[in-house]
Image (cartoon, rainbow, N blue to C red):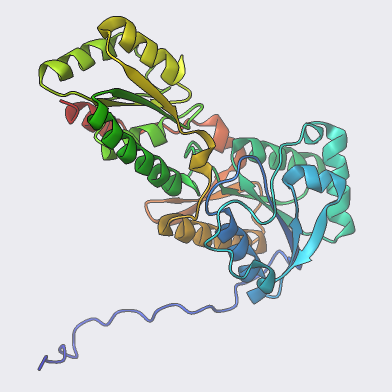
Length: 347
């Protein structure tokens, strides 16, 4: 039978409860939209925004089809029941789109007018740097308070350790790599696998380490592709009949360029597999659901506190605010330690 701890030991603090959050900004109604490419976990973020706002007596307007829907007036009231059974779903229930019209002052003026008609006091934008640009100019030109939530699989936004959708995209890509490795080993072939990442190699680097790849090519290090030829030759000399090469789509020449260099330099048969948009879909993993839930709650609290023009992110486990313009002006680098690890383990 276990003994009770001595009474003089420090006691842990009481766990926090969902107490009313102060609302000095007087927010009565907010709007939320998803914009740009979809990312697993966007629905969890929408759900968190709606339920946090409702818990504190704030109404929510859902904007369908992103900024495209905003300038056309595609808005409706949404409540807790509208987001029930969505936390596990991929994509976005509010739909998303890219809008050329929103890039014009006239398009943004139309969107601002619709928000005023609906009595909206602030807008939550879930998306990447393009979406944040759209929100930033809306606030600059029309004074609409904007809070950004980082929703993009590329994990390329400064001000947060991870973006919503990144964890799921890595797991999806890794599952494909594991399956292709089985095929490569059976046929003694080299697979060159392209993962998403137009300007950033976060997905490629993590997948390369987790998937045991022989080499990884990322935009942050546009090294000559000729180097992979010697790597493959060395692998063959060591008795390895198959190899996995990971390439971020933003690397110059992409997977096809890397594969062509390998075939030209070694004469070995290669296969190119471009995973593409499969990485965007699917049910979000738990890490994305939790991250989205925390940031959705934080976005509502930021508006209620009178904060505007920032992205809510998580750094070292803590929620922080970063000015929207810094999320794209300041570069978020890949982990140099992880890159070194990938090279060290690829012998």
